[in-house]
Length: 431
Image (cartoon, rainbow, N blue to C red):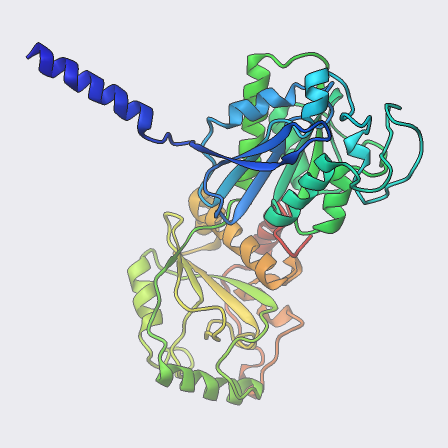
């Protein structure tokens, strides 16, 4: 019995050694420094995740506290759809010597292409190098950013104790400032910085500087800054969508084409260029009843037309987002706008009920924000069904239906909804 117990304990210990942890990291080579030292990055989460948060702990060797935040992030699990890419030091020469510069005496954060200006001599405080990206470190980091296109990049510096208004997404910068308890202030623009280059070269993404306070970070501060990075990751995580398609075969597509011809003069069933998102609620508390109504290709009770009514998305009261129809196909959900609008239905009996449901509201806002970025739809064109007649895209050939609308998601509710949208991170293609 004792031998068996020893064997079990040994097997368990071995399992602990070989099984990957929840936050297992994959190390990759970024390049080498001017002095020949390796520059490495670590993936935490899948490199195939649709969103990447890049964190650079140090670019000036005399400003090392950000490296402690990077080390703490190695043990954090990023949210679904997001990976951390962690560079503990972008300047191993400076880190080894405890100096600002690399081995060539260049300030790497003045060596990037945007606004680069020549001047000075090696080992002058802000010496920018002989040309943009003249240094192997900055060149390697620029190549990494081009390859990965991180949704957010945080560059740690020291000693000014602030989050810089660096020209990235203000929501993300403010979010970090709030979570880290640092002031949110603007540093005067500087030539050749990594953040200015990134924000110019990749306007759909966001890079900013965090200036840590002087001295090493204590453990609570390290945890707070790692938590701020995690908050950024949650803010940019893609909305999870469950594919729950309704039948939309050739007959229904033919009916949709005939409807589009009759109402819009468009000889097509396809949604070519969505310009509007319309929010609805189902006037019921049952996902299955709404799904069955949309799935049944029967004349609707209100207008008696085919195809049957439908929406592209249906959000259940628990916050689960179901995609019913591809956004490349027209759905009948809003008279006068079906030709150019994506429809989002919410299980619920009122605006107040839907917007008062935290999970459902959060899922709705994230889905809408994602669709805005994907289709370049401005927030002013995110409307409630009750606002359909005020849309500049409204058109209707059938005279008796030109004033036809519904009362769901009326203007007061949508003003609140649009304010909440505006307070979120800007999606790709909308910044």
